[in-house]
Length: 115
Image (cartoon, rainbow, N blue to C red; front, side, top):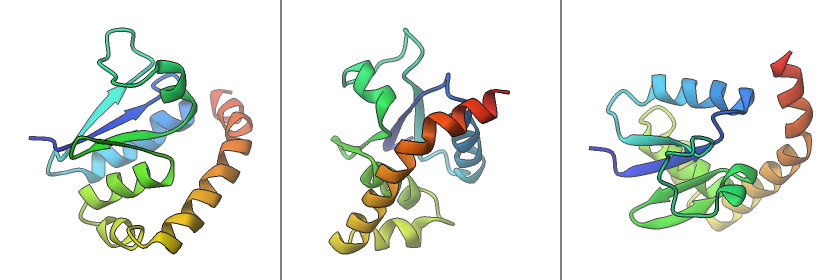
């Protein structure tokens, strides 16, 4: 039974690739992946916000950005050490700054992958 819900943009080619990789690594089925681009998807937050930034729900808490990625990594044994390291405020702060930089180039990467 999945204890972590990950919300992703199923219309984003970059997001689809990353989620496909995470699905392959999630051999225990610990993550429920929810495509927020699907109008039938159950999403506890505003769809626009969910599509603009990566979100995950861990133990009933909604996380976004680097914290959401860290939660996903903790659920996957291979990536768990990175996710645990991100529990450190300094590490998470660095990851969040990197994530914000990524968000600036994300539209270009999406266009490149859509070709």
